[in-house]
Length: 199
View (cartoon, rainbow, N blue to C red):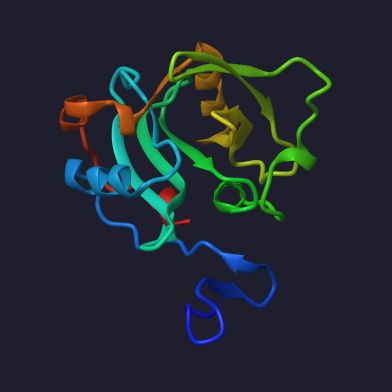
């Protein structure tokens, strides 16, 4: 990947052309979350309130200082619906960024070709007060459950580990865009950094 320079004012990849670089991931804290929230041009989705026993365990974004965050990923961890630990990543991104596909373990930047939207959605969330259907995304590794849909004109990915933790998506989670949460962000309980967010 080439940094902006004399011939281009954007980050360039030899294969994909113009790209939005993934910024370094820092340990989860209210301050780290605040930095991403203030820089982001897309929603920063988090289940709010968090499911019982769940913690915020990381945040990442793709973008640069000039364009701001064009994709965000928030990690949460807690007890899985069938016992054992569970992890959930929520990604919001503009078309063609590819951050969700990276975490889903898939080729191609967008989930569209891997979703069967002719059938009813397999899950629904309430994203910023709006019912939001999510479809199962085919082609991901078997260790995770991957869902995707559209919220606010952008891709919304939900990726759960292990695969059985995808049952969380059938409970109609309530997602809040933390850019609109105000002082509530200060109340987010933080856990240890999730290795999933490191990609």
